[in-house]
Length: 124
Image (tube, rainbow, N blue to C red; front, side, top):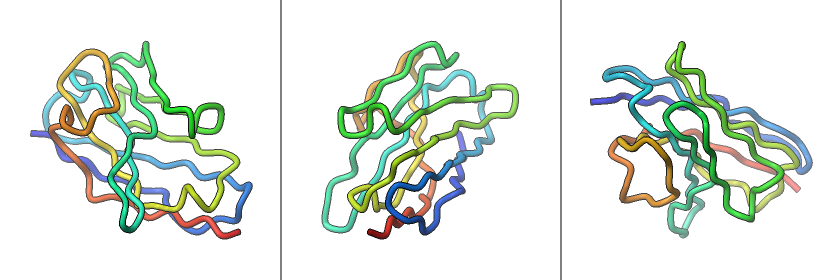
Protein backbone atom coordinates (compact mmCIF):
# COMPACT_ATOMS: atom_id res chain seq x y z
CA UNK A 1 0.00 0.00 0.00
CA UNK A 2 1.23 3.48 -0.90
CA UNK A 3 -0.35 6.71 0.26
CA UNK A 4 0.15 9.79 -1.90
CA UNK A 5 -0.57 13.43 -1.16
CA UNK A 6 -0.15 16.23 -3.67
CA UNK A 7 0.53 19.89 -2.88
CA UNK A 8 1.60 23.06 -4.62
CA UNK A 9 -1.44 23.81 -6.73
CA UNK A 10 -3.00 27.24 -6.90
CA UNK A 11 -3.96 30.16 -9.10
CA UNK A 12 -1.39 31.52 -11.53
CA UNK A 13 -1.47 33.87 -14.50
CA UNK A 14 -0.81 32.64 -18.00
CA UNK A 15 2.91 32.40 -18.61
CA UNK A 16 3.60 31.69 -14.97
CA UNK A 17 5.06 28.67 -13.22
CA UNK A 18 4.14 26.26 -10.46
CA UNK A 19 5.90 23.36 -8.82
CA UNK A 20 3.76 20.47 -7.65
CA UNK A 21 4.93 18.03 -5.01
CA UNK A 22 3.76 14.54 -4.19
CA UNK A 23 4.72 12.99 -0.87
CA UNK A 24 4.56 9.21 -0.55
CA UNK A 25 4.33 6.98 2.49
CA UNK A 26 3.89 3.28 3.01
CA UNK A 27 5.70 0.69 0.91
CA UNK A 28 9.12 1.40 -0.53
CA UNK A 29 8.75 4.43 -2.78
CA UNK A 30 11.70 3.47 -4.93
CA UNK A 31 9.95 0.31 -6.13
CA UNK A 32 7.37 2.38 -8.04
CA UNK A 33 7.50 4.36 -11.19
CA UNK A 34 5.58 7.59 -10.70
CA UNK A 35 3.36 9.68 -12.90
CA UNK A 36 1.47 12.95 -12.98
CA UNK A 37 -1.96 13.10 -14.56
CA UNK A 38 -4.57 15.82 -14.80
CA UNK A 39 -8.30 16.03 -15.24
CA UNK A 40 -10.22 19.08 -16.38
CA UNK A 41 -14.00 19.35 -15.89
CA UNK A 42 -15.85 17.17 -18.37
CA UNK A 43 -12.65 15.58 -19.69
CA UNK A 44 -10.83 12.29 -19.26
CA UNK A 45 -7.85 12.04 -16.94
CA UNK A 46 -4.71 12.43 -19.07
CA UNK A 47 -1.06 11.83 -18.37
CA UNK A 48 1.35 14.76 -18.32
CA UNK A 49 4.59 13.08 -17.25
CA UNK A 50 6.07 10.00 -15.66
CA UNK A 51 9.42 8.87 -14.32
CA UNK A 52 11.05 5.49 -13.76
CA UNK A 53 11.93 4.02 -10.40
CA UNK A 54 15.42 5.46 -10.25
CA UNK A 55 14.65 8.59 -12.25
CA UNK A 56 16.61 7.29 -15.21
CA UNK A 57 13.78 7.64 -17.70
CA UNK A 58 10.97 10.11 -18.21
CA UNK A 59 8.07 10.41 -20.60
CA UNK A 60 6.07 13.48 -21.69
CA UNK A 61 3.23 13.96 -24.16
CA UNK A 62 3.72 16.59 -26.84
CA UNK A 63 1.33 19.06 -25.23
CA UNK A 64 3.63 19.59 -22.22
CA UNK A 65 7.03 18.70 -23.66
CA UNK A 66 9.50 21.51 -23.09
CA UNK A 67 7.30 23.15 -20.44
CA UNK A 68 6.94 20.47 -17.74
CA UNK A 69 9.72 18.61 -15.93
CA UNK A 70 9.25 15.67 -13.61
CA UNK A 71 11.87 14.60 -11.08
CA UNK A 72 12.00 12.51 -7.95
CA UNK A 73 13.94 12.25 -4.73
CA UNK A 74 13.94 8.67 -3.48
CA UNK A 75 15.72 9.68 -0.29
CA UNK A 76 12.69 11.74 0.75
CA UNK A 77 9.95 9.68 -0.96
CA UNK A 78 8.76 12.52 -3.16
CA UNK A 79 8.14 13.32 -6.79
CA UNK A 80 7.83 16.78 -8.25
CA UNK A 81 6.41 18.44 -11.34
CA UNK A 82 7.88 21.75 -12.43
CA UNK A 83 5.43 23.49 -14.77
CA UNK A 84 6.52 26.53 -16.77
CA UNK A 85 4.81 28.76 -19.30
CA UNK A 86 1.39 27.70 -18.10
CA UNK A 87 -1.69 28.44 -20.15
CA UNK A 88 -5.45 28.31 -19.49
CA UNK A 89 -5.59 24.84 -21.09
CA UNK A 90 -3.43 23.57 -18.22
CA UNK A 91 -6.22 24.27 -15.74
CA UNK A 92 -7.17 20.98 -14.09
CA UNK A 93 -6.90 18.88 -10.98
CA UNK A 94 -3.45 17.31 -10.97
CA UNK A 95 -2.92 13.83 -9.53
CA UNK A 96 0.17 11.82 -8.84
CA UNK A 97 0.07 8.09 -9.23
CA UNK A 98 2.30 5.10 -8.50
CA UNK A 99 2.79 2.10 -10.78
CA UNK A 100 4.70 -1.04 -9.69
CA UNK A 101 7.02 -1.24 -12.70
CA UNK A 102 10.62 -0.19 -13.24
CA UNK A 103 9.86 2.09 -16.15
CA UNK A 104 6.86 4.31 -16.67
CA UNK A 105 4.04 4.65 -19.14
CA UNK A 106 1.30 7.27 -19.34
CA UNK A 107 -1.49 4.72 -19.16
CA UNK A 108 -3.93 5.16 -16.31
CA UNK A 109 -4.66 1.45 -15.90
CA UNK A 110 -1.04 0.78 -14.91
CA UNK A 111 -1.29 2.95 -11.82
CA UNK A 112 -2.32 1.24 -8.61
CA UNK A 113 -2.33 4.20 -6.25
CA UNK A 114 -3.49 7.80 -6.57
CA UNK A 115 -3.43 10.91 -4.45
CA UNK A 116 -6.52 13.08 -3.88
CA UNK A 117 -5.29 15.74 -6.32
CA UNK A 118 -4.41 19.42 -6.24
CA UNK A 119 -6.17 22.14 -8.21
CA UNK A 120 -4.23 24.21 -10.73
CA UNK A 121 -5.99 27.21 -12.22
CA UNK A 122 -4.38 29.37 -14.90
CA UNK A 123 -5.98 32.70 -15.66
CA UNK A 124 -5.66 34.35 -19.05
